[in-house]
Amino acid sequence: MKVSNNKVWALISKDISESISDGEKQELALLLNDDPQIKKTYETLKVIEPVADHVKQDIHKEEIRQMTYQKIFSNNSRKSVQIRTIPYWISIAALFVLALTLGYQTIRLSRISDIEVNTPKGVYSKVELPDGTIVFLNSGSKMIYPARFNGRSREVKLWGEGFFDVKKDAAPFIVSSQRIRVKVLGTAFNFRNYPSDSIGIITLERGSVELSLVNHNKKVLMKPNEQVILNKNNAEFLLKSRIDPKDFSSWKDGEFVFKAISFPELCNNLERRYNYTFVIRNGNYNHETFTGKFKHGESIEQIMEIIKLNTSIQYKIDKDTILIY
Amino acid sequence: MESSNTEKHIKYEKLLSRIAQNDQLAFNEFYEIYYSVLYRYASFYVQDEDTRKDVISDVFVSIWHNRTNMDKVQNLDNYLFVSIKNRSFRYIKETNAEHHVQIKDISEWELVDKMEPEQVLINGELHHLIENGINDLPKRCRLIFTLIRGEKKTYKEVAAILSISEKTVHAQMCIAVKRLGNMIKRYM
Image (cartoon, rainbow over all chains, first blue to last red; front, side):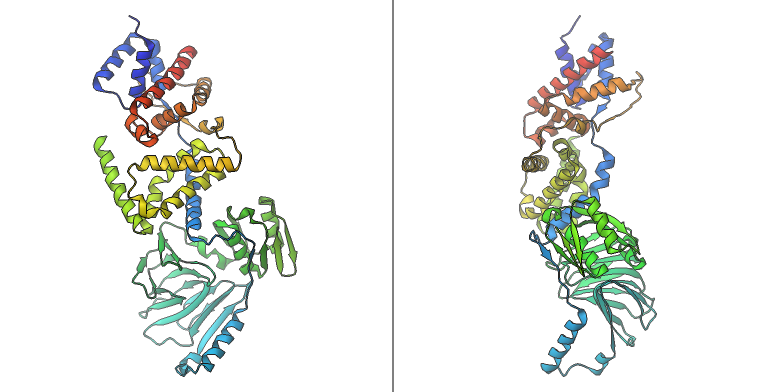
């Protein structure tokens, strides 16, 4: 008995959609047994599974996540970005003068024995603190620390980026950067908080870290291979786990590793590293993200060539300014 | 099947209400859960990888920006699907790209070799035939087929995602099965 094929197709449709009733299932089984050709066709239909490429999907997951957070947190500036720099020592001198003229007599003598380390753009430095803690300071960064720790706590101030390899001691080690405070006992972490950035990034390599924001009740306890991204505008933070901390401290070995950052951010980083001023007249790449690694020893010309090859931007180097158009 | 859907629903309700209260960690969890499904929806409409990334991140961004209203969304699957679809069309219109799915898109598919007693073996030629057969399906039909066979959705779930009736889903599925079935039958 030849049953209308439409009936068979309808039953098969329900079956391969997991939307078939028991009665219909039995009906289908009977029909399939009667017609071996249809049965073979059914078996074939059952194995068709159109799925997206898992590999591609996984590859882009982090990148798209970064893009999402970038779009949520960054200030959208579509006009040409001109980034100028003011030498730190000039701004600090002004601050000192201001304090004195306003008659701040509460400046204690111990202040004078604070040591200030400035790493100008284009270089990074290594400092050993009085307790044996090693600090790498990235370019365009500043650190102030006392000539001697007082025994109850070890406090330093940071502007910019530093990698801290903290000697274990009963006295907690505290790094303050604007309103962000990182407190540790003995550990290795990367602290990135440039004043001009809207976010601060703390990456923990080993040990444990207590992160807090001054004037807020929030405290975050970090474990190794975790990273906290703090939004300085609204005090919101994001905790990421299972990251590779070496990616974020490779600058101290002379490498510049970046993952899914925007073009303005890339230029910002190159500015600090190579001490050039970027003037971006081409807004076409503001929505692109860039991922890559530049090794120690590559000149700014080599890097600009690589960027040019991978985009279609034109650039011109004029003394200490790079024009992108 | 039913209870797992209600469980899912309750779990996502909690997550959405946390997000509505500015909980960034909850938003990150949401990203973890929904990334792959949004990627697959976007793959259906957008061929260009970079545009895909923009579409997906834009939809997540809009969810964050609308977070105070997200817990009021009744049918999250549908909301997400429609968001991806609308965003895709907007990008495609802006970049003047063709907005029907390219053949290359659906060629990213796999055959699961179940090794049933019948020992179904699909050779390269038949594989290719089936690939073309799927690509030649009318767009809506192909979408429904992909959601059911690729995403393992039931009639009920597909109806919810696309905001159509189960009857329509079944009708479209029958079209796909009949076409592909006849094609396979002729080949054998």
